[in-house]
Amino acid sequence: MTQQMTQEDREFFIGLPDRVLLSRMIWREAGNQSLRGQVAVACVPFNRLNHPRKRYGATLMNVLLRPEQFSCFNSDDPNYLYMLSGVADNDIESAALTRCFTLADLAVEGMLVDPTRLDGMTQGATHYHKIDTKPWWAPILHYLITIGDHRFYLEI
Image (cartoon, rainbow, N blue to C red; front, top):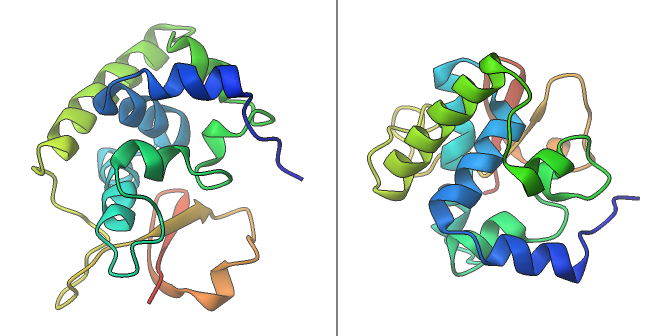
């Protein structure tokens, strides 16, 4: 079972600006992926925010911090401590984090083109997972595309 963050940690994350929260999520969920893969991951929270069912949250922060949605916010995830510190271990990680800040700024401004929004679709992916995992929800969603190490899906 996934461990939820403590109330203290939740309050810390709530105190971060949307762009910082989003940049850390992109960094820890897709920092080692291609630019296209990082853009796809960056677009997922916005696709959830704009989903017609409105069940993911009314703000970007609510979408990102919704329990058990983005694994980097689960306290038992290996990336969790990096999420709290926002500090990279080496130059490669530091460069990835810098790029994720830029992507987050562009995403918040609505300037990213979602690579999961396929021809003729009005919405891009609402979910993704690493290709080496098999989440319970994948078979019930509409598969869209694989980019790098992630498979992307749309909740219809």
